[in-house]
Amino acid sequence: MRHSTTTPVRYPLGTSEGAKTGEVLREVAGLEPQATSINVRAAKDQLSNLLEQASRGAEIIITSDGHPKARLVPVRSHGKPYSVDWEWLRGQPLVCGPSAEALIRVERDGRD
Image (cartoon, rainbow, N blue to C red; front, side):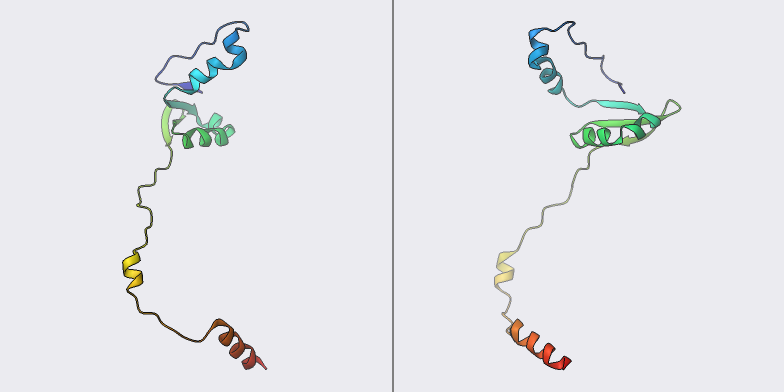
């Protein structure tokens, strides 16, 4: 995979104190998600990883023969969460009928 909009991140050579503690990786992880371009064959091999990246907000461009063919982006729900209209619900008339026990008894008696 190659990042299409940024230069590659260079890690310090050797085993520096920052590399031992993971400080360098934390700095890189804090970067904004960038669009990543990947060949369709490599995308097949890394689909689970690409889906995970997309779910975190990354945009993945899948190419074939060097040309962009598809874009993998996170799903954004545009719908409003369901809410209950309690006033309307309280205003509905109560309908009373036989209990569940009575209905089951009638059903069982009808089978005999």
